[in-house]
Length: 95
Image (tube, rainbow, N blue to C red):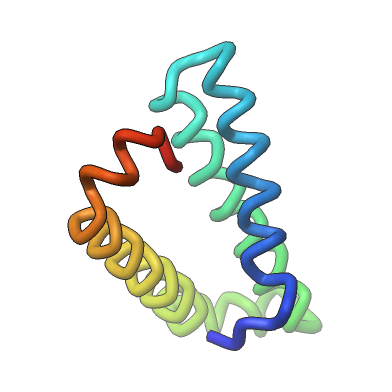
């Protein structure tokens, strides 16, 4: 994964929107919507790299493996960070 100068700013903007939505509806529903949006955007981005449905279908498993591997690595990193900083993060209510 390549991280540019605005990588975390974009992520923080999405998290800020999610936090606002959590004020209106439960965290679980917001989380489900975010996961769906991530999947939908990933599917769209994947489709952008192909010139036909058949070409995309042939590469489906490889594309899915890449996306799932990237998500898993990011999730692992963030869960580990929360474990290491649990008391200070949860006291401040960080997302």
